Image 1 (tube, one colour):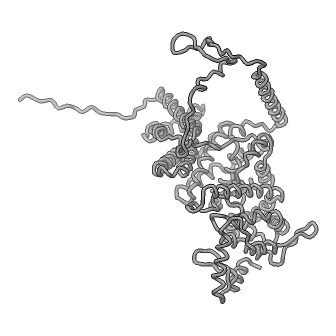
Image 2 (cartoon, helix red, strand yellow):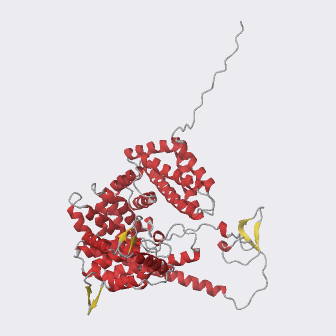
Image 3 (tube, one colour):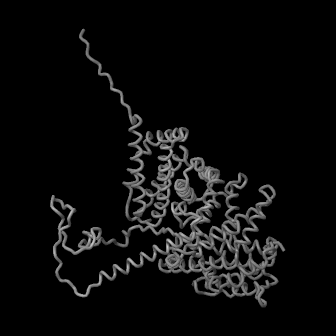
Length: 589
């Protein structure tokens, strides 16, 4: 039975009627008093995130059950899945009560994923389950309303943390039930049909599957798990391996490089960014697939030496007798403000242990003047994960990088993307250009992003984010920090382009060198490029920008000035040429 026919049948019976706002209200048509009673019941139910909706419990119970070791669906399984989607539509967006009730009842593990894996050939159940998974795996910040003055900040934080914990459990369940295997077979079936033979419903199903993969990869990792699995495979690493193993990564590269699948290129780029999100480009580029076992042994030896060194320092710090004599010491080879040796009033073992910060007062910051923290972290993971991602990165550069970046930039210039799509473009520029530079610098693999048009586009985006930070008020700290993070990604991309440009200028190939000289003429002569470092440095504030952003900006400025000095030695740099005006002389008559 078709899902649209199910919806029409429900509307005729009066089970679910869609109002003007697109929300579904459950009541009978002939009973007007039932409308008021159900509305009061709904308001009472969503008044607290801990309340239980009996209708939702009955709907989940009607999905099916286990018989011995096999899950058997109920007679109205597809209808029940559609009803759960409607429950999510009418839930309280501030409390997310329906979402939390579904998670606490363990419906995903006991009912939804067993149905999905047991009946993958049932089109009605598959389509309804994909629609439900898109909603259930949505990010916690997207589930809740952006502005809610009635809710306390502590309560909102608690709900967000609860949703994130349940999303991490869903991430593990996706690995347990091998959901990526079924997604891969369905994606390959849809892509074999071709763009012309696919219907609108098939395109929508394809996009929804990609959104589910994006949502699962976007689930934040647990800090305790990251600390325990720093050098081993975490849940995210296993999910990345399953995506590569079942061929979804190759299907993504087909979507990125195909000329007929332009509508899915931004979403595919976002998924690829999430695959490489926690890894450093230089670390991936230096990983050698032939030395997997040697790398494991070296890492274990390094960890053992580090642990022994910590124990040795701890043993040296323990003394049998306390010395009450501080003493005064002279540090040889270290000059003070005079020509004499530096005098120090503490006993130190090494010269690097000397510090003048011990007697300084700590600068305290109020709640309204907190320093912005950089919460991004880099992982090493296992050599197997790094080698698979290294091969995927090399294949992505060789197959579809230039075509994908050209299509994405064209969509962004025509304002066909969302508000945050520029960040994925900037991150991809920075990561893959650095990856290409650290492996084996080939200009033809990143030729699309090493052009004057790309330089001017990134400069335009940087100025846009700069104006957005200025235009936001002083009280909108969180929004300013979000825009500052996007500005940081743009500065990193600009810096990496300068690194590649410096290698182009030093190339032995005359064609590559001439192209680099043309780009240098543009970025050194135009006033916007010269004033950019000063403009961004003046705007820096510890409340909105992180120290990592300041370090990247200073290094970018240093690189630009160094390239300018090298350029001025070999070329005649004329910034502004003025002509002397002739002073008319008085003539005697």
